[in-house]
Length: 111
Image (cartoon, rainbow, N blue to C red; front, side, top):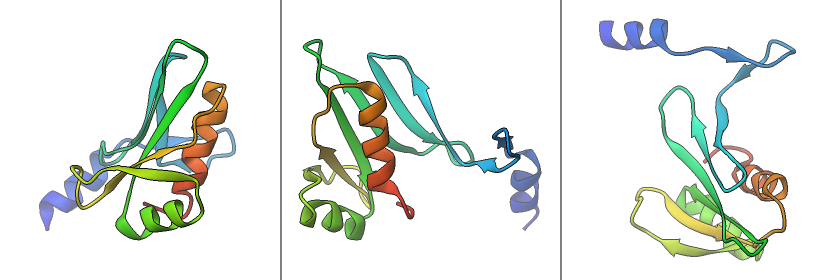
């Protein structure tokens, strides 16, 4: 009980310009980036560049979200190793911004 209270007090609090709390943030550069949950440190997505102009977004989603992504032909299952989540590779894109946007859209509504 007291440890939960202490975690809450020391949890980082980031806000955007409008004062809305930010729960996830992208860390990286134009070659590789990860989407990290600020409170837990959990990785939600990873985008890498192949050197030929293509960006490969991978999201780590719940099994139900993974089924939705697969059903909508937005991506395909890569691995079950990060259980209870699934690694889903999304459609390859031509820019880092587009790949980040696709990953965030796939995770929209929680993971």
